[in-house]
Amino acid sequence: MNKKTPEDKKQRQRIYRNIEIGVHILTWLYIFISPFLFKWSGESVELARYIKGVIFPLCTCLMFYLNYLWLFPKYFLKKRYKQFILFNVCIIILITIGREILMAAITFNHPVHHGIRQLPHKDKYGFIPPPIFFTIRNLLSYIFVAGLAVFIGLSKRWKIAETARKEAEWQKTEAELKNLKNQINPHFLLNTLNNIYALTSFDKDKAQAAIQELSKMLRYMLYENHSEFVSLEKEADFIRNYISLMKLRQPKNVELVVDIDIKGHEERQVAPLIFISLIENAFKHGVSPTLPSFIKISLKVEDNTIIFNESNTNFPKSSEDKAPGGIGLQQVHSRLNFSYPNSHSWVYGSSENGKEYHSSIKIFNNKKDSTTHNLIAL
Image (cartoon, rainbow, N blue to C red):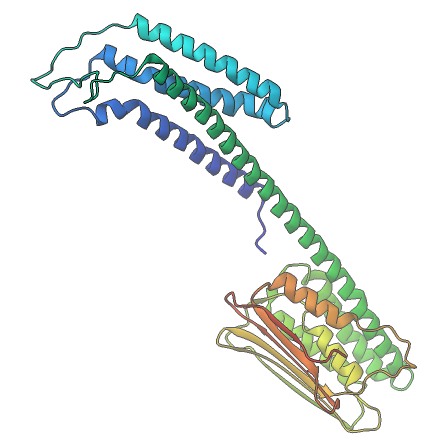
């Protein structure tokens, strides 16, 4: 998600406004200079003839902007359709009368310029269209222009409403993301404090070391993870500190393999605290105090793709265990969808015999189809 500052939004609005004004100017400029562009070769355009030629474009221009700037926002948008139609009828009548008065007031000769014969008033069949024909043509043109003004106005309002809707949706997503981070921190802190409490009962030295590791992680959580993204190096250090903390209380029957290789990609940006929930679950469900257990954690970057793999022996919670759980996977799913829409894949689940659990996340640098496979949710 790219954050837009208020200044960016104002700049964008200014650009759109300038483009809109420019389109209006160019359109009407073309209409008024068209007599010069499409005249007969060698034909001169006398002033009186030109004025008569632009009276109708002027009338349509007046009709358009009276609707676009006044009638549409004041009457049509407020669903005062009767007043909207009545005003348009009055304007059309006034414009028609005014145009006829101006046309009658302007006189000009009909000379032949440079041997170029003027176009006849009759068509090839000798038919002269009656005045009513031109009146109907002008009337339909004015109605079309009024409808065009309404259409453009509605399109503009729709664009504004759509932009506002997307902005509201973005703000809602930001609020949900912040709320999600606030959920992660207490959840993680609760599990860690429980681990340290267990250490204090049998090894005070390890408990002190655990508190020191916890202070490093809290510093990260307080000052670093409030950003939408952090460097991969900082996230990797956080994972290492957490694993060091968990190792202090692991029995000897646990095989722990950690492979973090991000060389050359330390400054690559990543959303914070996505992987930690999976690592927490690995230590919570993957370790038995008596049976052989293993946890394997890998974080690498290959082909510009961040790859996190985790596997562990599976010792799911018994039905008698009433401790709260199940939050971690929901958080991972939500964080991936918020931070990497359409650019991640996540495959997770238990093996067929249910004795092992695997989870694999890939975060692509470019946009790819998002795929989340839920094989067997623990």
